[in-house]
Amino acid sequence: MSKAYNLLVTMALEKKMDFLCILDQDSMFSSNDIKKSKEYIIENFNKEIGMYVPEIIYSHKEQPFIQRNEIIVSEECEWAISSGSFMSLKACKAVGKFDENYFIDRVDYDYCYELRKKHYKILMLRGVYLYQNLGTERKVLGKTYSEHSAVRHYYMFRNRLYFYWKNRERESLWVVKITAKSIRHIVDVLLYESDKINKLIYLKKGLQDFCQRKMGKFQA
Image (tube, rainbow, N blue to C red; front, side, top):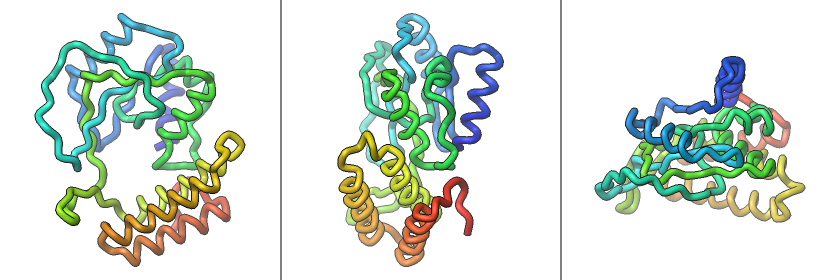
């Protein structure tokens, strides 16, 4: 995914565009909301904003009926998923390419982190909605849970380790965060996921590959 993003950014820069809207295959973003986002950016342009992002509605969570509000309320946030975002290409040039070590998972989190390091802001447009499908939905202990494949767990585990190691000079508690989040990940697999043994094997593979600096696309 990071390679595809880099290709799109390069193409957009060659065409001298100002913004790039990214959409993933598991997202639903209406043409009306895209239009509203574009109009807001044009009317309220701010060179300090690196990304304008929609409000995310995850399909695995129970959601009340959303009353569409034509008035957009903007709110600064620390990070957002790439899908549905309008990325400032000027900010892209300042930040540099998406880190292709990730392949998938943490790509967007890492990019937002780099934006903030360069003093760009991320602005959420409340009143603009993107519907996101996150994994496979299943009922666990009376709640709807989003389950992921073993390979996706591999990426989640390995890339989390890489992110905190990569930013260890800025993250003073990076060892504590890695340990706590890794343990929580293992516990979640044991409590909520099916095919537990296989997924734990993939988590172990993620740890091994990180230690050996085998990044990018998963190699079985």
